[in-house]
Amino acid sequence: MKYEVLLPDSYFHIYNCGNNKENIFIQEKNYAYFLTLMDKHISSVCFILAYCLLKNHFHLLIKTKENIEAKKISQSFSNLFNAYSKSINKAYNRTGSLFKDRFSRIKIENETYLKNIIVYIHTNPVHHGFIKGFETYKHSSYKAMLSNKETKLLRDYVLRLFEDKANFIYTHQFKQTVINNLITLE
Image 1 (tube, rainbow, N blue to C red):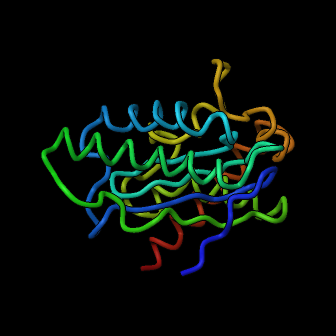
Image 2: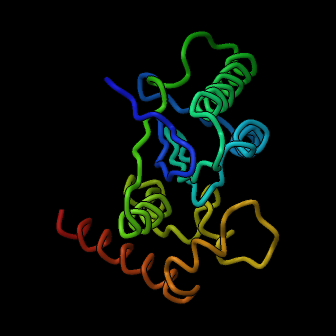
């Protein structure tokens, strides 16, 4: 499989799942540790627009910074995933690959797709049946987008994409309604 090069000044949906469908987050503290490692390894090469960490996979929406070599961007992500894998292997006395494969990435080319990916990422726990309402899921960036607390996310930019906070909420709730209706039809 050919992987998209992580170019500077570009948007990407980054995702991966556990090897053999295993969980990559075993305990609550693992989620926070992954976020800490994200800050340590990738904050110098990209901005985070949205994220969702689920027990067996994750989604990140990033914007790579300008004037950074593509090789440095990819290496930073590799360092993040290697550091996390090593810590999980050591903490839980496991060996081998934690992740299924190299991380997947899709370049986002237009604003409509960018907004759809943000909503997709935040509603992903509902889509996979982990929770009934995305608003209460604690391992996504959704709550941070609505908060007034300091964040490293590009919150103001994301909210402007949706025009304002009210439309950001409405768009997510509409997607939730669509998911609920599809579940009801099954």
